[in-house]
Length: 517
Image (cartoon, rainbow, N blue to C red; front, side, top):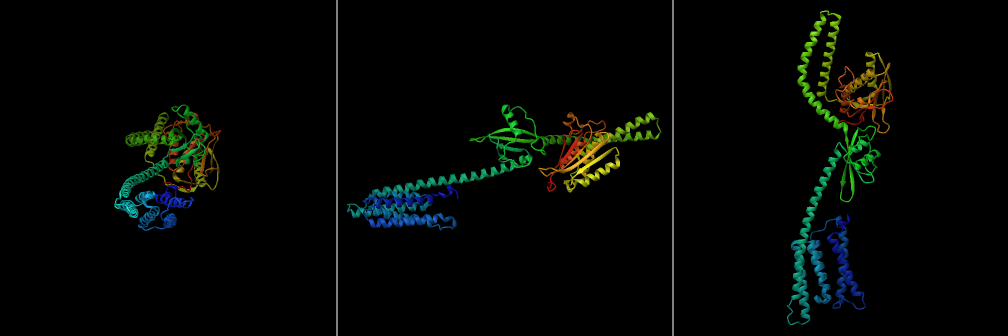
């Protein structure tokens, strides 16, 4: 139980009852001559001791109230008994003239806080009757000419009822305010939970850090980018330097970065978060590959609609040209004409291949991922290449226990493309090296395809995975793009790795235990 829940009005009133009983006893027994209870000392002492005992018992039961429920009449009965006890205290002290009648006012106020409605007014009525009885009783004993002159008790009664009315109005307003506060608290909690879900499900990595660069909040995407939870950790130096550059000039574009070996290229963006009592900073880590991929998907969607419309119109003339070429070749043309006709046939075949690849981009079926051993598949693919291509050799360095989850046919397509590129651009003689294993830190399986050629120029690296970009005379620029798309469809990544010689492509697979959605 919290402190705010422990100090309820009932418990505060119990503390007041114990305190007032102790103070009255102290004023009666403390001085050499008693200050209170001089009219009827025995009654005063007995009443106070009984009142103190009842209040202690009531406080003890109230502390154990959470263990069992009390009947509805318990609280009214306790307040009525308080009125009775305090009336006896006032009576033994000489009635209203003794000055202790004000104690009834506190009981009336407490009664209207704890009971409300007609029960609260009942406490005020009983207190008024007690005051009138005291004034009537002592007027008779004092042999006044008019014992029914109850002016003082009447004024006290008016005060009792006014206090009851005011207290109940205040209590109703407090109840209404508390009810509205609870409703607003529920709404805020729902909104906070909704915001939390939205932030956690965002693909953009989000970090919140303070002036000392300690991370105070991070969503799941940011944790995945760093391969571990970032809450409570220090911001990496690469991001700290970019934050300082952003502070110097917020309009200056920041360079991209990688936060880990397996993370994509990220674009950092900063924003101030002023909470009113501290200055925090928001960091957004956007995956540039996802943005570029979405832009490419939009272009490919338009290209797919266009290619579906033009494929029929283009293929019909190509079929006619190819058929005419075959007829001319059947007539035994001269060597010069035969060479020209063969050029026509090669270009017709190339255009047909481009149309076929473009159509495959727009209607590529969804893969069926399965779990299998990577080494066996690599041996199968390299064996097929050794049978149809005798110009190159293969060097395998694979761990035997590497398992991946991937569409088998699509992975064969990716490997065929990478090996074909390696054989075309490799050295003389060409050697294609295939390695596979597990990352030491993340445990994710990987596969590398490396050649011994001249490597890839810096200019070509910037456009390597973009569709229709090629440096080969007979290429269409879709091979590496298709390979990366197939890897993304299977929750894997395809990247170019820096090597001192040749070109090395690395595929980082998802964990084989992970079930794709």
